Image 1 (cartoon, rainbow, N blue to C red):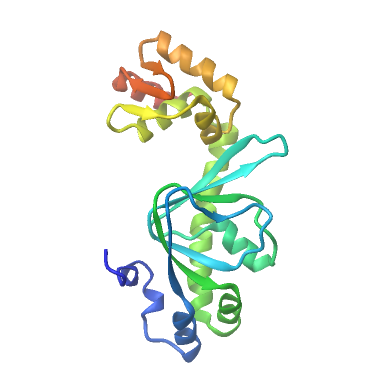
Image 2 (tube, rainbow, N blue to C red):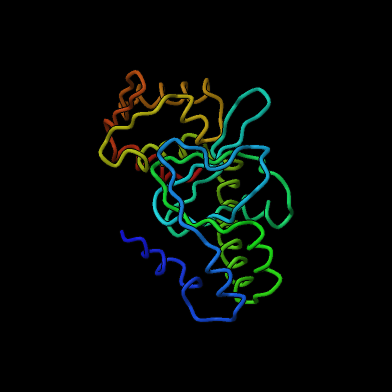
Length: 221
């Protein structure tokens, strides 16, 4: 990818518009994050509007007891719902963003974001269209966590995260992804192993019967 490949992802920043739009485009900067870096911390004020060019940011929430849950991921072409919400409300992050891979992103300073909302109808449409789309995805994620059958969700997750038939993940990792307790996930995995669908190792899961997992994932409950 070239340094200008984001023009196709976010054409707003290259379209000829008003002087306000050109000011916003001049204020945006490209940033990089190595794998494992913190994009934002729980409790921090939001300093930038972020748009991902390449890579993936995992957004997680932590309880006071230290339990984690994966809320969603921000991938290529996406914006972060919580970042937008914090900028709009001038609040602080209720969750943490971690670079799951090396990440390239566009960062627009908060002050420029606020000026853009005030002065540019095109920028407002851009921001709220992205916000609405991502918010709908987050709502679907919450509905799945709240109402989806855990066995089905576990089977779908294993298939999605292990396209080559094996997955490096701990039971705690899976619990955070699926919004459950580690002990519950361990029990579910053991049952899948007893059914011959998977084989468990230390920090490793082999999909022994992907077709059987697919059948389970698609079951109506």
